[in-house]
Image (cartoon, helix red, strand yellow):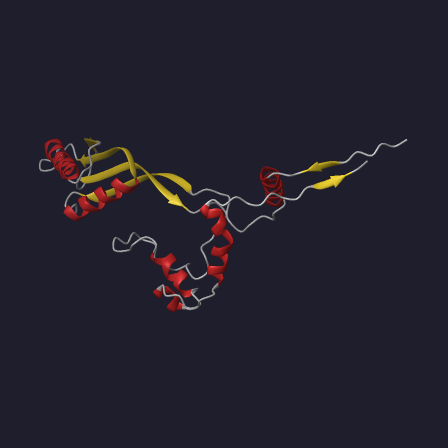
Length: 218
């Protein structure tokens, strides 16, 4: 003998919400790979060196060196002034004075970590200033290429550029009706108004009507 059992099941909002979230997560797991790179920007470490004769070293060299070090450099900036130990005019005292001058000029431009010293070189014709420090540079992600059309574009720092200009320019080209930017309503029954009507009850806190139950038997 079979006994028939009837019951009423009233699913709550939380049950429907759980089902929607489950389906959404399942859809995400089955989604095909997108076109975004999964690699990170590469950080390259290198030793930056510069070799300039004392006679040619100028304030322009100091400014360029201080600017590059502030953006890319790390650790002590080594300043070495070479000299000929047999020279009467460009000996150790001359080299020490030049090393101190270069260090002072760099400190005036904000470079604090400086290691300045002199180095004797046999049969040296003229004294030279040798600069060395550890530098870092950022490159694009591994196995990445520039977007077509940007291969030969300059990517140097541009102080006058405002972030977001390129994005807004591209966005502006995608606006189908530019007059919509005026913010004036063009129709009394727009899609936006209909969408607002659908969520108006939820926004004002009016409860939804209870769902009708279902019956099952076994």
